[in-house]
Length: 470
Ligand SMILES: [Cu+2]
Image 1 (cartoon, protein in one colour):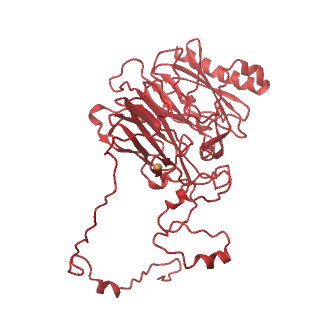
Image 2 (cartoon, helix red, strand yellow):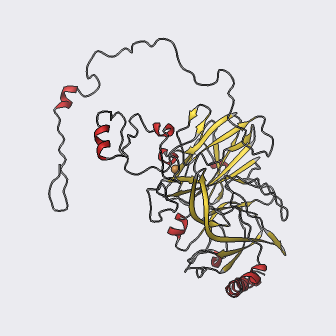
Image 3 (cartoon, protein in one colour):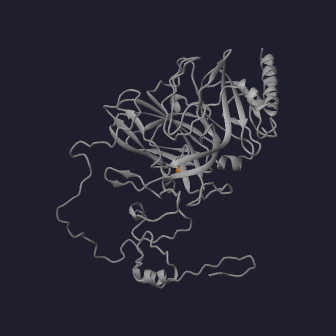
C-alpha cells in the first residue's frame, strides 16, 4: 500500500515537472487552479466544504488556501512568485511570496488527511518547500540537494504525504533560504485533530501569526537580503503596526493564538490583562501537567507556540513582542541617545552647514510620533499607531486584543476603541504636591560624592600590536 503510494507520488512529480516544461497551459489544466489573494485584509475563516470537518483558523492580515478534493486527496497549488505586500497603509514592499502574498496562505488540513501540494516556481532561481515540523517521507522534506533537486524556474513539483500529527507548522524554502526567507517566502500550516483530542481543546477563535522581519531602507521597496541582525521592520505576517489588524474576540471566548517564528532572533510575546497557557510547541500538544500560566512566552527562532486563554476581561489589551526595539519601525541605525541634551544653542550653527539638520529625541523618541516630518516616499512611519487617547508610540510587532461583550459569535469586524466604564481610567492627580522629604545624611548608603570626583578610570587592554589604549 505504502510503496504503491510513493510510486504514484514519484511518477506524478515527474509528470508534472515534464508537463510544465513543455506546455505551460495544458499541463496546468491538470493542476488545481492556483488561487491568488493580493488584499492585505484579514480574511474570514475558510469553512471546509469537503473532507473532515474542523474549526478553521483566522490568519491575521492573511488567508487560508482553498483546496480541491481529488479521489480522497486534498490538492493544493502554491505558486512561488514576486509579490507587492502592503506592510502598512502607505508603505509597500517588493517581496517574494506565494499566491500573491507574503507570507503565503495558511494551509489547513486534518490529522490523517492525504495531502498533495503542487508547487510552481515563478522566481528567477531554484526553490523548494520544506514542511517545517511535519512527519513525512524523507524525499518530501524539501531540502534542495539533500532530498530533492531544486525546482527550476518555470517548473512545478509535487509534494505528497499524510498529515500525521495535529499541531501548528510552517513552510518555507530550503533553497537559497537566506535570500528567499529574507524576501518573505514562508507560510503557516495547521493540522487540526480528527475528532476530540485529550490535549487539544476546542476554542472559539483560533489566530495565526507568523513572525518575520525585513530590512528595507526608508524610501526603498526591496529588502536588503544580507542583513542578519539589524532589521528595521519587525512584522507579523509581513505587516507592521498600525497595519496589523486587532485580534477581535467576544467576552468569555476561548482563544488560541498560534505563533511561528521565522526571523533571526527570539520574540517574547506578551499579552496584557490575561494569563495564557502554552498548550503546544513544535513537537505537538503539551501535556497538561507541564503547562503553566504565563503572560509572556518566548518564541525562539524556528519555533512554534500555541497560546490559549479565556477572554474574560473586557477592553483593548495590548499584545506585542516585549523587545521594545521590535515595536518600532524603520529606524535608522546608530541614532545616538539625545535625552536630556539641549540642542537649542547649536541648531542654527549646524543648520548652516547641514541644511536638512533636524533635532531628534531630546525629550525621548515619542516626539517622533507627532512630528509632521517630510519622509521619503514609501517609508513606514517610525511609530504611528493612534489610539483614543493619542499616539500609541509603537509600531512593528504590536496589536490589540479587543474583548467585547457585544461582539457577535464568529464576527471579526473591528468594534472600534473600548469605551471604559466611568471611573476606570487612570486620571490626573490635581491636589497640591508636598515637598519630598529627603535624607539629610550625604552619601549614606552610597559612595561619598567627594570620593567619586577624584576617581579616574584608566582602562588598559592588550591591543593587536601589544599597545595600550585608554
Ligand atoms: Cu521581538
